[in-house]
Image (cartoon, rainbow, N blue to C red; front, side, top):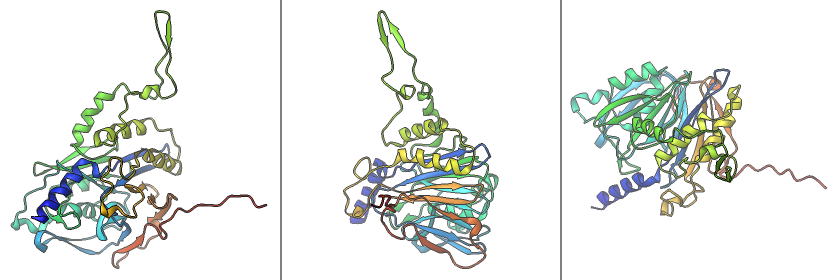
Length: 362
């Protein structure tokens, strides 16, 4: 009974806004693609690490009750961020510039039924991202891979429930797809806007954008009614009506609005600034829309645990964390992915701000 109550409570927290991740993609004039996201988790610290997955590694999926699932050998090296001290790549990029991110999808994710006869092609929801990253070089291969495997319900022990997730996949050129499991079947949506949040379904979010076609970066013109002149009170009047709450539909609209009106950038390095600037608008404090105040949030400084930005051309991961907003990088071209075990590095060597003292000497 206690386990059942815990699972119901976990579902309620997840569905009520305990997870509020937002992802965007921007392109530079030189063709560079920068794909980034926030990781919001207001329940407990995910204890994420940098994870480095080599080529030629034998990987085995584990199904419910410890039953063996699909096994495969990694074809491409991967760098990403994991969670709960497990080799779950929740956000990563491979040597081919393919990036995959897992985003929560509570109330809508419904996976394929487990068939013991197909255990050899079955994976947990938390395994699919790793599988795509380690075996696929582009979106066509990712689509084909999804059609060949079965993603089945497997309880994630850290949650006590089956993790309800959907996936964004972005290639080196900046094209994206979103993979969702709806009604027990996979659905793949083209995602030309490169934006993703959470529930409901991706096509619903795109339809909902029609409610905001009036938004514009251009200010509303002055108007005169009889003898009275009306002028906007200040800059930004073209964005009146932009939703500002933390719900997934509102964040999706804001992410599209901010991405579509981002300043033009000439290089990937300059675009990186813009990705982090936009994503800063989606940081969520503990106790706002998140499930703050729980025993397991002690020591956390934010519900936004970390923010990433992947340069799919240069093959570099950039990130900052709730503990230290200094941007750090991991260059995939400088890593030897030949053989060996999976490696991990801490996101923060020291969980404190890296503050430079610029006080002038006397």
